[in-house]
Image (cartoon, rainbow, N blue to C red):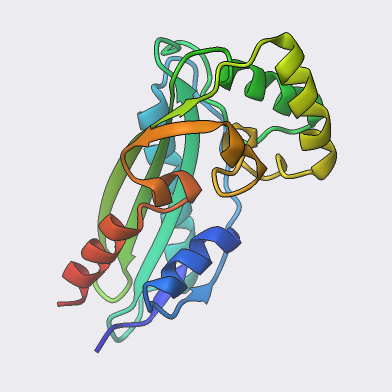
Length: 202
């Protein structure tokens, strides 16, 4: 029998992915400082933020008297070769979203990294996994970009999305291919997460 699962995230996409896999979950989002530290790699950044979310949620919900799993996650977008630049988190306003999409459609592949942090609340045991997927988008010239970006920004789909886009939404028309986990780009590397949860449940 599966132990209860607490999802420390407000993302409806992560909740939906877990539901598809048959995992019932209690939603318990947390807020923590997601500021990037200068010099931090995108992978180190997203791992640190996921771990901080898990620790904050665990402090609120644990310890428990029976096995209970807690999952926190964070996703970021980054361009190869931009190791000294901040990764692309969630844009704060339209201009920032526009700049992100311009970078992503300028001819270079980008990467989406999702880190997941787990806590078994009855024992306090912590574990983590991280998945990086390469995403390739159409190379848009200025005219094609302008034709796309106005209606896209007006639709508001860029809000609350790392990199300013959702691969399952309007921006799907830009994606020419991926290498890695599709669901990780959505917000949760589902196959890896389910395997990890099953291992923790044994």
